[in-house]
Image 1: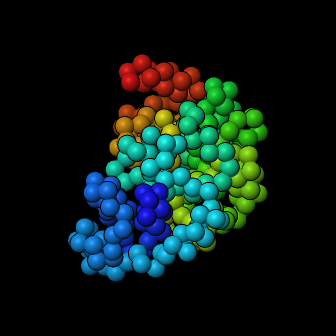
Image 2 (image 1 turned 45 degrees about the horizontal axis):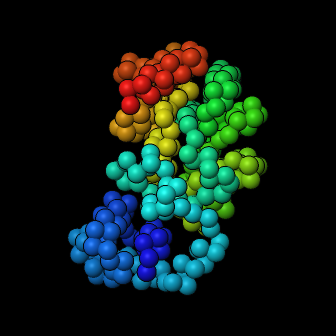
Image 3 (image 1 turned 90 degrees about the vertical axis):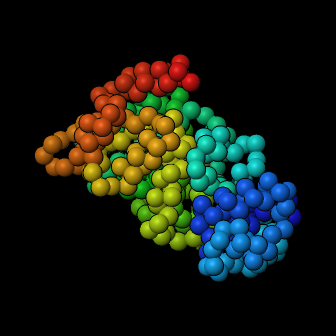
Length: 285
């Protein structure tokens, strides 16, 4: 078995978490040995939980390879930004223009129940970011995420969605037409093979990829306890810049944004606030 097939097989194996999968891959790579047994995997991870390593047969791998487009950790095109994080996805399935993954990217996340103010702010900022040639990254969720994708498209820009299901499943259903459009002319990414239904734990995992891929994360309307704040916190852990738009102190939709600003996030009133910070980081690094 070659390294690329090993990574695909490992990514499809159930009963092993991403931390253990990374450990297994590092062991196999160090020892140049890709034909591990289920028992050997158990010894490497020191985990007695059963896994289905042997159920992922060569025939199954051949079927996945026939029906999916994907890149692995060992491929040259694999994003360097993802190599730098503690638990990188070993395989990324995709539909669309994979070349977008190598362009300058800004993530835009925010409230599912966005206000008219959030809609207008997202429209203005995304339009301006597209003019500066940024690819917009988000999670295709209801609200700000979907708005960000839609505005990037309407302003003739490019956009990337990272989703928490298989690429053949549209979730939420309201985003189905948008997902189909993006799969044709933009880019959709997922850690999960076709047929994988949405699970609660998939979305924090999805958020780490959004945070890692982008140069920074722009938060438009987010409560203190929200998925958007998780993405922002992960971005900070990865050394990325976080941008937050101030909002109303009445309805609570922007309480998370205000907390981020108090904690040192860049307060965004216009796109120049983002551009200035981005150019400063480029000079530093």
